[in-house]
Amino acid sequence: MMEWGKMGMFDGLSVFMEKLVGFNDFMMVLSLVVVWFVLMLMFNELVLTMLNTWDMESVMVEFIWTVLPLVLLGFMAYPSMVLLYMYDEGKVVDLIVKVVGHQWYWEYESYLSGGSSYESYMEGAGNGVLYRLLDVDNRLVLPLFSSVQLLITSSDVVHSWALPSMGVKVDAIPGIINQVTLNLIVPGVMYGQCSELCGVNHSFMPIVLEVVSMVDYLSWVVGK
Image 1 (tube, one colour):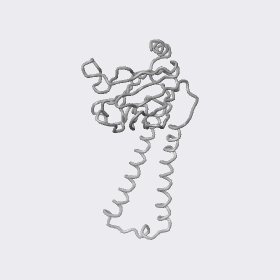
Image 2 (cartoon, rainbow, N blue to C red; image 1 turned 120 degrees about the horizontal axis):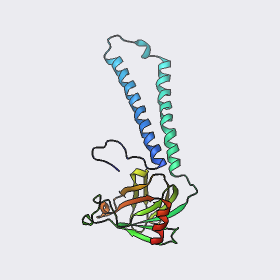
Image 3 (cartoon, helix red, strand yellow; image 1 turned 135 degrees about the horizontal axis):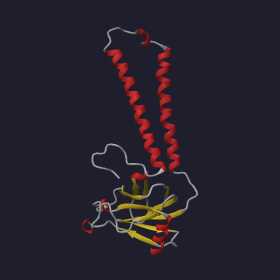
């Protein structure tokens, strides 16, 4: 959950998000090294009075400033591609949940509960909600330490199912089913919102994921 005055990213609540935060930290360190190196070269050329003619016409220098950026780009591209394919990697899952976006609410259908579906609307401000515009009447409840595949689509316009603390943002497009796999390793409640402009009430279709133990999840399924 984001806190007031926080400058960093969300706390990672999934394996993918933890790796994404680590990749962001790596990129920041690499960028700072590049900036420091360029500033030192500029200082050397503009401030120092002595003129070094060796770096004005040198095959070695030209070779270095051609190869070094390629090496740095390789260091940036490799972990980025690993994360990209990890995001779309198909795995054996424990549970499949279908997510359908509507104007302006979400519908969830769990195949473990016999294909029954339920709708998730935003809770009004007067219902004792903890976070204004972020809580819903029916949360998406999933079991802890499980791998869950979400099949995401829309019934009307383009929506986007986004859960920042899980590192997930998937477009819900009419006639197309997109999929993403959640590896649930941390219990708790996670908040998100529709992240695609979908009409006048776009800001009023939040997403709430509650991760509970398997015993509590099975009790919740029986209750549904």
